[in-house]
Length: 390
Image (cartoon, rainbow, N blue to C red; front, top):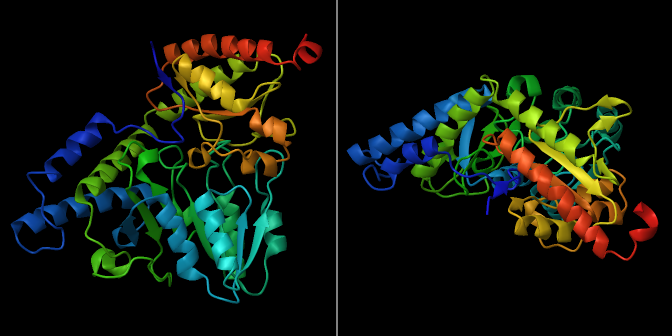
């Protein structure tokens, strides 16, 4: 059976170039990057090379790159590392659970938390951030790209708002890495988090941009690794893999890959919308299209249970998602779609299609043959369909 993977926002495979770059550091060059002998020096040079690549990706100083275990650790570091009792924290109701659950925890420690809701388009409007600011606002955290809808948030405007308010600004950029050109100075952020496995690097590997002088307390304490910003022996193979993936990501932002991916996403979206009772969730503000990542669309199917459709498509060789992989198996509808105004039934009837950069036109054609058949079959089994779609 042919299998097509349309769940890249959940995770991505390692690219061959990434595996090749990592390979020597599992066995031949196994040294501890903190050791001063030859083995350690070889590992240290590899870490430095990867740090240079991440600095180019972020457009920052090498000393402002901190390697960690991924997006969750980065998000948690920004929130727990900056907020203290009496502070005010502004974030949004469509963030990843790494931000939302951290916000819930600091709220129990006398940090006041304000959650900004999106508009129906999926956009956070900057004026809503302005309205929420208080004299004790210390941190604003807004994601760059939503993991379920792909909608890109106006982080540059929010960065200016944070600067005017004298607040720190953190961006969860996990879903933007390799899809959107980064420039932390243009974004105006103090901290930015990415995760390797969303950009063809290893799972359990990530990095943060931490602007020089930002007084963030580390989550991990112990040795003097990462300039005392994140203790623990460096995962040299993982760091090397992330560095190589960052180099490849920068190439794809310049060689037309992103435009090609957007065209495939649009082809998929247009084909699926030919099915009756379907609509795109978010991405539109009136008649105007709002910016999205090139690989993502989220579509609602009337009179279909989303989880049943995920299973039906998987049996036909097409892997998609009902939302964030971190909530897979949850009986609750998507908090993102609910925040955008969808009711529970529509939220539960929605699927996310997220393409890998290696997707082809033949892949999309195959998906467009499989999806209508699966939808028709499930609707035929539903007792409510006959009177609504016939």
